[in-house]
View 1 (spheres, one colour):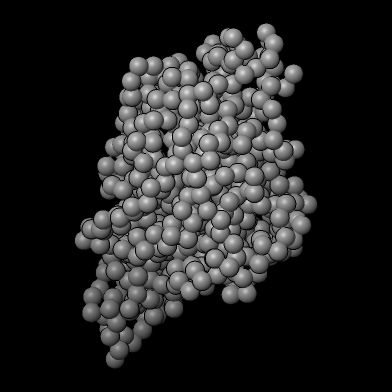
View 2 (view 1 turned 90 degrees about the vertical axis):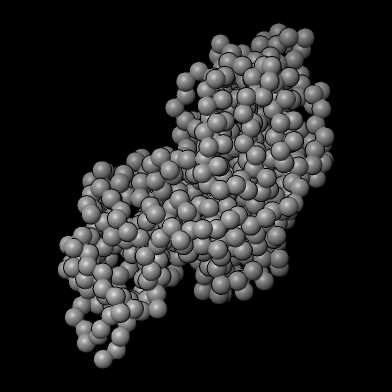
Amino acid sequence: MKTVDLLVQGANILNVFARRFEPNQLWIDHGRIVATGDQPLTAKKTYDAEQQYVVPGFIDSHVHVESSLVVPSELAKVILPKGTTTIFTDPHEIANVVGIPGVQYMINDARQTPLSVNVMLPSSVPATPFENNGATLDADSLRPLYDEPEVKGLAEVMDYPAVLNREPGIMQKINDALSLGYQVDGHGAGFTRTMLDTYRQVGINTDHESVDMQQIKDRLAEGFNIFLREGTVERDLLNTIPVVNEGNAHQFSFCTDDKFVNTILEEGGIDHCIRLAIQSGIRPETAYTMASYNAAIAHRITNLGSLATNAVADLIVIGDPYKVDIQRVMKDGKFITEADLQTKPLKFSANTMHHHVNKTDLVLPLKGEHPICNVIGIQNNHIETDHLIQEVPVADGHFIADLDHDVLKMVVVERHHDLGTVGVGLVHGFNLKAGAVATTIAHDSHNLVVVGTNDDAIYRAIQEVTEVGGGISVVDDQKPLATMPLSVAGLMSSQDWKSASAGLTAVTKAYHQISEPIDFNPFITLSFLTLTVIPTIKLTDQGLYDFANQKFIHVQSN
């Protein structure tokens, strides 16, 4: 009689194919489920689930690890105990700063952890051809990375004009992935049905950018696998999940996209998505299937996300399926313990701060006594912006902050090649009453972005993040209040997740000292105000960009 490593018995096992819980047994050997049910086998160990519920390990369909502000091995310590056993990550944040060495750093650091970190190669570095980022990754430079076992496809394709025009560079990247049998992810922010169809024509089958019911319906009609998103500010799940039903649920899974480590600690990651789905009326059996099997199939992986014979033995023991109260987590046939999570971030030594900004670069000249200007309007808990047209105050021909109407100066400083380019614009919604906030997280080119109430404070905040090699800094009108160093490419902390979370808490507390109350995260919101592939107006080191018309525009409109 054959002996296997482990027998899981006494459990209500989720059958993801039928979307129902069934009394069953799992026979596990060498990290795989080798049989189910009554079998002529013996096991070295037996785990009695005592009538609890067992579901497959959760899968994050699309996430940027860098957005957690910790390196992959540290993020694993936070999300593994919360049930996420596999992620599909796009390291285009670090790739936009240091290129291929950044991607390789993420792969190498992730190898320390039991978490399965599947890498989708960055498709858009740079995201657009009219910004200054740190590196360029063409198809030839990406191709050797497919030899890495962690690489599973091509990440979100953001350059729609390049796809529409079938430009050779992007088409080669797409075809390289498809020829290897891998998935190509989409990025359809603000897309019409016609634009979505353009992506389907070239083999792009997934999307995570739906923010309302109509966008979900359009993607369903075009046959996309849809990743419902719930990040720190990308709060889209509750707006979109009412479309999901038992007939179409197979086209949906969950993703976090961009989520700070302290947000994950407070509410969870994919486990939070499941709770929201169940609270919205989705059956637990369906929600857990979306969180596992559906995500695996969307990424063309057939031996993951189920509790069936030949599947990877990633599973979670749950007391109450409605509460997602996780009791134990198994990865590759082994229950996770603290001993599995004793790692340290790999060293990252590259200097990524190269600029020579002067205080005179921060001035915004305006003409006339009552200038009418294009102003970026924040949408709370969303990464899209409003295009506002407002009259703003001037003094000596220059803009001055309008604290009464919450119109502040925003600045983007190129930091990769010391080019000296600086973009200056206006933003509404931060509710600052003094000081400034600066960060080197500025999607996707990741230059230095700052918003503030006066030029002295803006310049002081720039100096603070520069001195620590990148990070987040909050200053008042006299002094620095708190700075969180992000020495790994100006994007991630080189410290453990507890220290990073404490640093994030400190800068958050400092922000509240200089602002009126807000109900969104100011730092990640600021970081997305530079992302020109998202509607509607954004600021780069080259100036103010109008997504709707695909061109740069002047700050002053009259």
